[in-house]
Length: 388
Image (cartoon, one colour):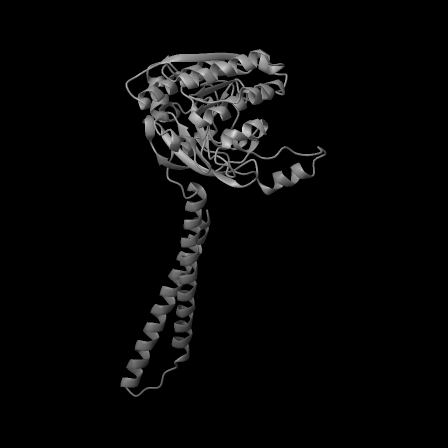
């Protein structure tokens, strides 16, 4: 818009400058001819035209710079300095009515910030406290593992400090611009790392589960683990709610991508290895937020997790998969002890639906882990659709 408004005066001033310069040149030639025949001439008209042409030249330069700056501003504002990733091709609305049924904005463009008048009107309204606007973060594409797209951004953590968050979009996300997808939050076990760096083949496991029709596609969110301890998931015994109730993460993901609304019908949690206790704690602490939790090859504190389930909100039933390889006797023993502790607990812990998977076997540890991730994906895909 700025470029088109400045283009008209730019052309007008340029035309006037050319006309004045031509007039000054003609008057200069007349004066040279007059000097040849020893005649006197008036130099004032030539000087006026020359000065006018110089002024027009300065104006043309200024208008050209303003036009160029306006064009660059439109490019930065319209594209956000981003490459065309899958997250940019769709709107940032977090609403939806079910898997594959949400509505996009016109052209699939993410909604812009409200005008100043709208903000002023909301501030002056009689309502006591207006709801905060959803945070839409810029996610940059960093790869295409498992046939999907991996993106990364800095998102405020529970303590307010920014931390890296990686989001994996399945291949179906780009193919169906009207679909909304379930979300699985995957917990990391190493400070300042995301879970996909600890389990790099997780995307292949999720993708193969979808391709074999054993799981519905879902969005995987991998937030960076907090610092301050060598084993972040050991904190669940002291503060399980800090693991589960990450409102800033849920709000940002729901506002940036086409997800099902945060809640047990569309959101689950996953942990592998040392990240498994985090996933179990999140599912037990907030069954009203996470409809299913899958913990793979974990070692658990049964008493602490039973207390976590006992103190959970009354609404919702925790649904938990504890998976370990057939040869992982220590992992299977830890899963059975946790299952027994929950059955003997109170509140939501006693209501928890715990399933143990102990049949995964293969020729290497990596292949067994891949099979366990497939089982976890299948369980999460099936259970989220049934949760209420």
